[in-house]
Image (cartoon, rainbow, N blue to C red; front, side, top):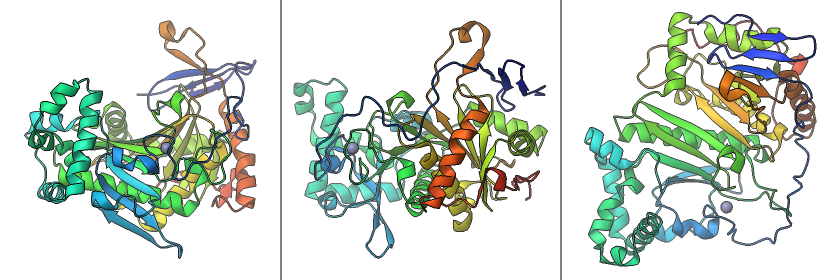
Length: 439
Ligand SMILES: [Zn+2]
């Protein structure tokens, strides 16, 4: 695919953009829509009463009993130490305060039955042993029955049907809790400390850079565990929908991991592009952003810029590492990458709905593509002619988006809330900054 003039600024200020990776055509039309303000409190904000333990949604501390058995939790101690605990018994779920929990999604997008019926998948020895251990304990049995019955109710089974289902049948149906491949990584707190309004939700940018690094590492461990226990998985889609306009069912911070038996259209297309031109990510992502002054943050391991040609205003963060897969990154590289993603979230604030999407090299690909994350702001208003033309409109110019991010980053860095080595004109933004193509 050859894209001619992917970025054309017209005399009236209209910016015509074509995404070099997807071919999506987007016009920025001046004067349409309000510009998002990271510091503004939404007009709909309502005062809240503080509850201890938090009980504002089904992911809150008071609802642990209603969520599926916990695959892992991450604890942080007073001395700053972190501990990763797998397979906590049901009776212990409220005995410690995790900063993140990993559980199976109650309603999987790609279900355990999908893997069983299409691949003859069955629980790995490790997951089966966990299931047996969990059910051997009376609290565990009670917990699984409780959550499974909730699921049956939500699946519109009648109370009579549920009552007539023998416990052993229910336990057989609970394989998805122990060996399913649609998982959630959920933040411990719902609100930030000292919240007064219902919009003071704890977002990615409200963590410390250290917590955010552990959030990433914990998520990567989950992805590895899914892959190790289901050999039919070819790719795991990892994403974070933040706030209802971005598709979140709860306003409680969480990431999702959905395992797939294919790479998905986007990654497939990216792998094909890199087969044609191994330097495509430098040419069309970072070099292009650098030549158009769209790079706004950088450190030794990652680079962040405004990505053009998306239906929503989009931030891109690329790892510079020659290690392509997330789990192949050293801790230092992961920290560098996580620091920039965290800084992006902190700079945009917690009130802009967004999707954080991960893109990385699939397990069974031999090409090289760099790990990158797109953060798409769900703030746009369609112009009305998208359907007939496939030309999308965007209400925020790439340069305007950059100019929202940059002053916030300077401010937050001065306050010590983010770790960013270079901001805006401080960025080296050198040609071919990404080293993914070096084997
Ligand atoms: Zn909650």
